[in-house]
Image 1 (spheres, rainbow over the protein chains, first blue to last red):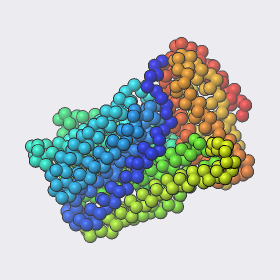
Image 2 (image 1 turned 180 degrees about the vertical axis):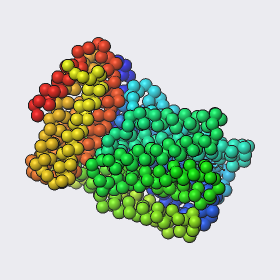
Image 3 (image 1 turned 120 degrees about the vertical axis):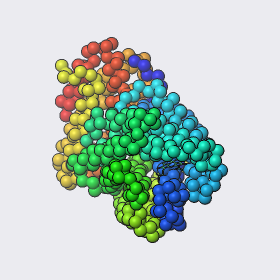
Image 4 (image 1 turned 90 degrees about the horizontal axis):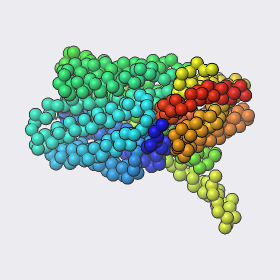
Length: 431
Length: 154
Ligand code: HEM
């Protein structure tokens, strides 16, 4: 029995994931501002400057921050080992990712060519170091399981996405041949189907049964999912199959994953009456629609509005819903655990982020989607939709900060009580 | 003798049995039925404590002996058992007061802790034990017996 490299650490210090989680809503706010100030141009085409800006504020800003934070949290559970040197890695990584995302957004929005080069350099360094460090940490792990397989494939996909994106960014900056821009189809496929979808699925294998009390996913399905998608992407990249055919297959896979998840949710004993259940139900419903829309797009291309609708549903409907719902479970749990490791009587998970605050956010988020879904046909809706998106991001931030405040005030209360209860010169060890 | 061929299969099916009792207890709690909840929870607690005991008394020592690691994974697993035992006590105290609200609040983190803990065992620790099982062919049978002794106490 070899066991080197296994540490079984329970969790990283809470400051590591939280610093990424807290950064995410700021990208949501920036994306909302783009909708508000430039919505008309944005809804003219998915290739417009504001559309590319918004897409990347959401993908390499909002989504990447949350997913990187969550990875630090999930790896010890899925892989039995934390990330080596995670404190230093997180500290170095976050400025690179935040800076890279802002530079890329500014480059798209204001046609700022230095921004393309800066972002390519920042992401190449940040993601390069991140992916390599995690692979080294996982290398000797003896862990098995669908989640770990998925995480590995998703990380390779992230590296591919960033490499292709970086090359296109340099082409847009005039430093490389424009021919690189022809790879946008592959970049999108690796980014959305490879990185985002496989990562969401890998996390879902863990989180859906755990947080939503469903039966587990069928094992073969969970094991095969990431592998099949990875194989399709590789085949498309190597030119073995057409990108169009690959897109069709990937869209079908996304729809099947969402349908399987919905079926698990439908069959559980408890109705989806809590906020995270609603967020995930909504996210999965949107993902089914996205899958079907994308297949339709492939078979009957040329519908500008439908492509934009797919974008609204992917970023607002799927990514935001699933990630917000996940945060509202993970954050109360990790803060609860942090306190519980030192004290017996601690606030309940609901006291960190209340059911009411979560439910209010869900309805506001739903209103945002209802307003934005018809916006590709009538762009003035971008303004109210953008305002709702801004408020939604503010609510997310407020709920996360509120959870931290609960932690602080509990600790302050304990300290005060200990001081009051302890005679002046005996050591008061809180327990 | 056990019908299970591997440690992973045996222990995993026992995890699922515990999960099932917990779900029943939760269903009773949602239906505001303290009597039913107490009954289902007692079965869950006994099975879970029996599971912990079988691991700590039989499986972990065998693992430690075969792998030469006594401060590694098993140490962390024991620490998590301690944490969950404390939560089980708190849950029981809440039920003794017929306080289903507190019970429902405390059961949330217990569920997550347990799932995380079980995943680590099922994905990492048990497969490692299975790979070393040639060294101790009688281990599965002993473990199976220990699990059932735990359950019979209930
Ligand atoms: C990691 C996640 C990423 C995702 C999910 C993603 C997604 C996308 C999508 C969906 C598009 C096409 C927009 C559309 O279809 O309307 C796109 C285009 C583009 N992306 Fe990304 N992207 C990611 C990262 C990056 C990075 C890190 C860079 C650069 C450093 C980058 C540079 C570009 C460029 C330059 C284009 C436009 C190419 C053109 O001119 O046609 N992307 N990306």
